[in-house]
Image (cartoon, rainbow, N blue to C red; front, side, top):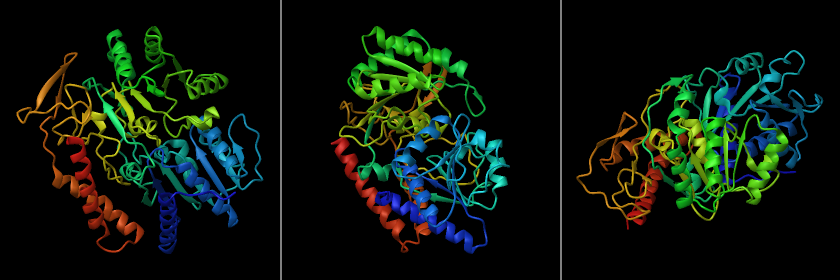
Length: 467
């Protein structure tokens, strides 16, 4: 069965091929990352690459780091007619097939028993620095390596250039929203971010649970959902199982059908709950560390399901985790996605469609996100240059400057100046576009023209919002 590609997916595949050819000509063993947003169809692109490579006589190993991703990738490959074996604990092996879907934990213990593939595709490749991944990568140093991720960053700030030679840039979230491949969105943030200590790169769970596990906060989550997202299929992200169950109980006490899942939920219970959610029998489905990287609700439930709203109740220092969470609601639909941010993650990390300059180099883990501001009337999060809230009509006064907000004894500075550094923003966009211009061999000046068109479209959108 041939796999149909969207135009931006075809362009990304062409860029991957160009990168491989370029590295071979330079005498290198090709290794690259294809980065594309959550919801852009990276598994579909991987399926296309796999099918094409096998047709030329190659062998492909698709490496995953979670059991849930093994199952759903297998379902995707089956759906498009790619016969494959499985290298994972608890699965029957079929080593004769040229395509294998592998669990990284099982594969690392069977390297002496499996053939070396000609192409390795790494799912969620920002984990590649982990010891097990690095061991496989080193043993298969002569294979072509293609990594897939929406966010090519590690929590510790170490770049991925030690494992991959090039970074291939797929479409941006802004591109996909503009062309109808992802949904527009509205973000509401009724709380001010609280500072937490970090452990292993992310916030300490016990501190988050203590801060966010209070009854009035639970009630606020239910109240805001009832006001902003009632009737919408909603996924929620909690800090811990205890925290998630408490929120679910608050919803149930309000007469709202809610349920909980986590990575330890039995497979049959998980599937049944997901199907109840898909049918609408469950309105709000909270989870802990399950609906994150690459998790496909439709594939795991066996039913079509479009998430219309997300509740962020789990603060995170990880930009990648934040984008994965909000991306759950950005699949295309008629109405904007509703994002209820009770964790302060939008202030920490910016909007889903901010332009981000991905790189294989090390980066500053404390780098500040693009500024945002919150409407004091309706809690909508908007860009700082907006002076009339597009959701409730609140007008910011020019005198409304910076102020300190006190939350549980912690002072958090919010920038509410309303000033937009358009010159710096343009430089950021232009740098990103020039990388694409060079990467794709586009005519000189393409980046400048594209930026001019982007600024013009942004001006039209802003005038609609403020008009």
